[in-house]
Image (cartoon, rainbow, N blue to C red):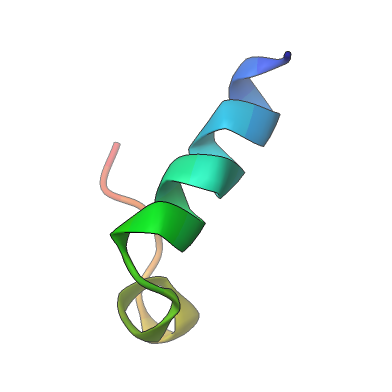
Length: 26
């Protein structure tokens, strides 16, 4: 699994409502 895919999965787990409007904090 690539890091990018992992971040996408984490984003979905954290909540689509949060990531839908805000980018992932790096």
